[in-house]
Amino acid sequence: APRISRARPVKGSSHSVSSTSQQNLIAHWQEIVKSLGSFLIILKTNHVPPFLVRKVYTQIFSFVNVQLFNSLLLRRECCSFSNGEYVKAGLAEIEHWCYNATDEYAGSAWDALKHIRQAIGFLVTHQKPKKTLDEIIHDLCPVLSLQQLYRISTMYWDDKYNSQSVSPDVISSMRVLMAEENAVSNSFLLDDDSNIPFSVDDISKSMDQIEFSDIEPPPLIRENSGFSFLLPRIESH
Image (cartoon, rainbow, N blue to C red; front, side, top):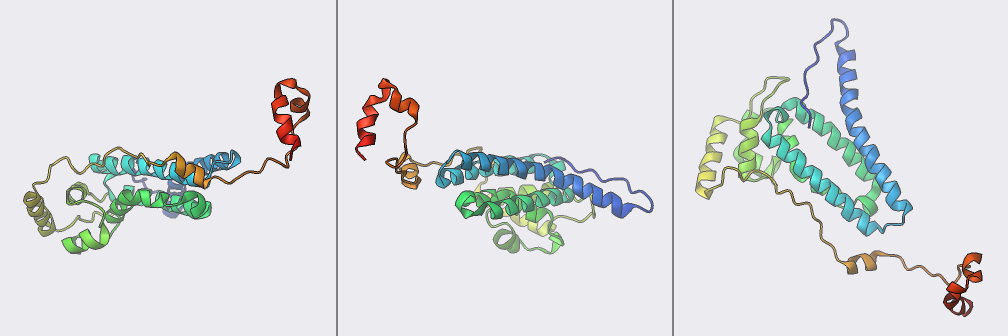
């Protein structure tokens, strides 16, 4: 996700500048959502089974989850409060798209973004110094590992309100727990494996049965002797 620089305020028009800035930020995500919608139209037009459509979008969102989450924990400029607001706004656009696409086509694709959703929830949460380790682990970011929580807590910076990250006591507790678990220092990254397995049998079961007996063959087939083997079967119905 791109780094968000703070616009220099213009006297007497701070609200206008802020509003324009927010619109520009949302515009990027709206283009992404537009692409998701256009792709869905193509899949529907070509009669791709909803089961396969759900798998495709789950795989796409899983890839997005890995890329955004790893970028956030590898680049400090991404681990800021303002970038958290930016991604949060984008995730809201994607969630709205999933709702409009319905469960029939979106399925559990939204759940594939759980790591980045919880990480962004941490970035934009106020009063981080008052959060206990238990609250962070079990309430705020239950899906994130201890190594990931430590990384995001130590990388975080607030370029908007100058707020602080979690308390030093929480950081110390994280270090103790990681030492006890013998955690590997670089194990905070997600594996770039967004494969969503499914079988041919899964696809065949999801496809609607199509009855061809009532379909009149075009003249080209009836008049061409090369297709004569089809005519007895067609005329027998």
